[in-house]
Image 1 (tube, helix red, strand yellow):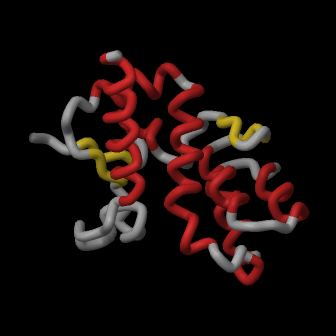
Image 2 (cartoon, one colour):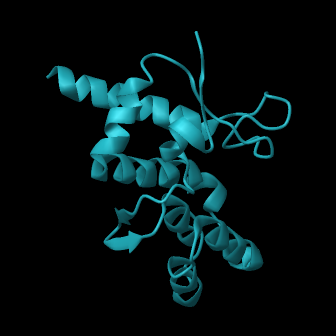
Length: 147
């Protein structure tokens, strides 16, 4: 069965960099990448700068420049935070809900050649956590629709 590869293109709406605004924890973010990058910090100056970034890529670069200020327990909570943000994005955009259902039962993979945690990585042996989150949310959405 053909896999659903997302980074851009047909399935690009699943990317955190895609231009879909998301309201998360009472704040409006330009992309889910903005929200995720800001979640790494307690410093309001840093989170506000990230919120105002012109793109998800700029938000990511800003977060990288402040890496020494990332909250101590980030490694323990980053998966749950990402799922929260992606869930918010999905719930706020009917177009993305439709696209997610169009994936059927196919495996969803973040087609990132450089990210072995969130995506497939350079050797296609990455953990693909972002793809797994989308597949989990797809199953939850289907379950709700059956009720």
